[in-house]
Length: 443
Image (cartoon, rainbow, N blue to C red; front, side):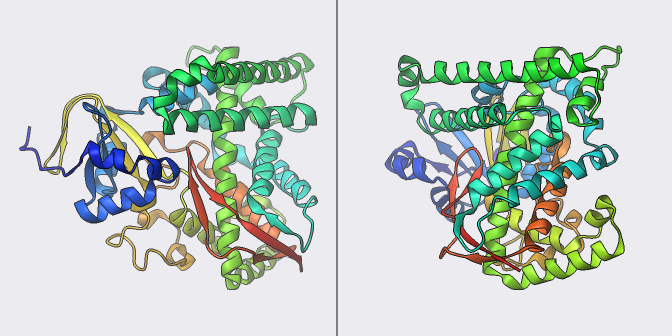
């Protein structure tokens, strides 16, 4: 093993001194440490417990791609989140994850997603029909409802009643709020158990599972096909020809709800805030829409030719990545660039800081969609909005298609005006916008 590089340490005393600030927003604390100590430091969070924080893009590429077999997800996802949404693609590890990934991957190929584009567009248009022109509106609830309805339409077509949809949305969001409480206030773990808060939320999850089982069984018994994601999941077969067990299917659907709507809602809200502050890019998207829709009625072709809209979204996710940190744990002893990692070392990569690193980006704090005029491929070693390596988000194409459609449908009908001074953030499980007050003016 190479000689260990001296990794700077933030002592427990400093962590405890700033614990209340960290509870509210840990990003300023981490940024100060990065500026003082360099791109990787060790944060002591207990007498014998520490976390390695890093904004080193080379190290992240090594952990997620080049030596990914030696790193697993931490208990934040495999245990804390899994108790509410089960063991599916997001939270599973090892053989279960590999088996499920092989099984589900074909459902998210671009050719399969093409069947869903009409449903996505319809869901988006229905949500925008609820907008009140010229009223000052918080953008996050608008895009949260839009993203949830899009997932519902893509999964179940139109077979789910509104009452069940609202209940599923409530349960999904309540579970995420509970996970944040547990992670930010681990010292109250005993109280969460004693006050039965955890029991209350696991009971809610059981209710969601019952709703989903009913929907799945109705589809199976009907014999009807909708060519939606549910049909694709029901059709999927393992190598031995068997289908997914019902419990595993429900786990995967719960994870699609959880991972498939909040991150997209956050990204769309941040993007609209940036567009509100930079109306010249609204005009560019509007002109692009007119051009691509004049050429063809095919939605997939329109999406492929929407380079300006995609560049705006890419730059928005650079500045405000919804998945703003990525966690891993080493399995065996390892070393990289002189740094030595013992088994079970916890690593937390700050995607937020990596995307704003002054050595990786020119004028990193400035909104410049032209960076991505030729796509994001040239930044693949420093740009990670959907993660990287074998565990890169399986729904990245779905999310990008949905966001382009959502932005185009909005911009071709409305001009977006800001009713906020600065873009505020709330770092929870995902990076969320706060007070995203917007006004939509009819064109």
